[in-house]
Picture 1 (tube, rainbow, N blue to C red):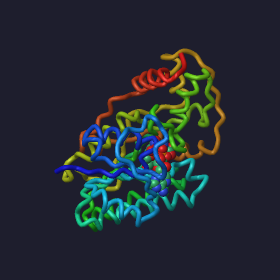
Picture 2 (cartoon, protein in one colour):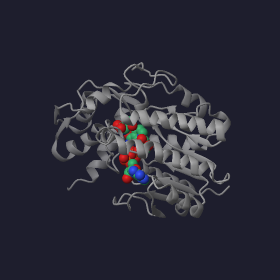
Picture 3 (tube, rainbow, N blue to C red):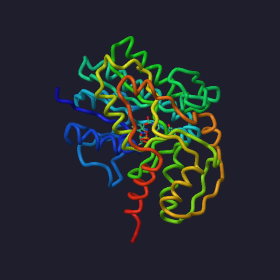
Picture 4 (cartoon, rainbow, N blue to C red):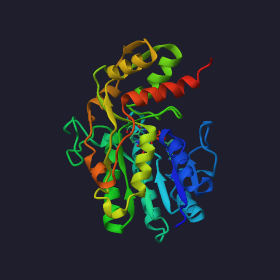
Length: 319
Ligand code: NAD
Ligand code: AKB
């Protein structure tokens, strides 16, 4: 079947690279990217683009009628730190926007065959086991972002079971990439550090030195997403969202690896409100369900990720 794809929230950290990955796979004209605004980043891949606010259900419905997508990748969201600053906006975008996408897909008369709507490690909370957090465990998020992502997971499962909508999802850990700045999360320090170290040989972390979090390099996240969406439906036992990980490290461990590969720099620590968010999230993740059901296997560990980030960020520096 010839696929046609609509992506919401395309201009963000994930969307910029997922749109490129989807266009490599399905062809440039088969993937319509969308966001609240036209792409500003020169790294954004060329191809069809629409301005689309997922809170406007009529505009979303009209876009789906016009574009006739067979798959929707719904990436529009407000991330953890940004959501703490504007809980109402986060509630609206993350829950109402998500339901609009599910409703429009459900009501498309079978035209939209699959929906991808990512979740996050933010669905876990202070009473969740922090090490090797299992797929099925306590989910008592203490952030607005986590609460909304948990509702989204339950809705995805509900639409699958009650309406037969093929919704798929991953609980991404912190995503590390160099093409687009992260959009207001708690794991953003692990991206910012590379830019500051390469430019100034100095970095101040907003998390404590020993604050471990699960992370993944963007090429692995893109591959995981495409592999999950390509997996036979009957192999998928989880319709809320799959746990997924590639590595876990603390700010001090990341700084040590950057020093090993790049040389010395000054590292300071000034924990802020994001420390409490990080403290409520897992330190490491058990992703055996993803490995067993659809063969997940990450390619990038800490040292491979640091080498690739340094290489690519150094290329962007003045000689
Ligand atoms: P981002 O903040 O970088 O990008 C989100 C995009 O959504 C932005 O371009 C923004 O303009 C757009 N958007 C916001 N409100 C919108 C609206 N009303 N209508 C249309 N677009 C709107 O986020 P991201 O990192 O690219 O995240 C994408 C998805 O992946 C989200 O669901 C997020 O929860 C999930 N995720 C990301 C990470 C990560 O580390 N980046 C980790 C876990 C989960
Ligand atoms: C954030 O920190 O908010 C995101 C996430 C892990 O969902 N990177």
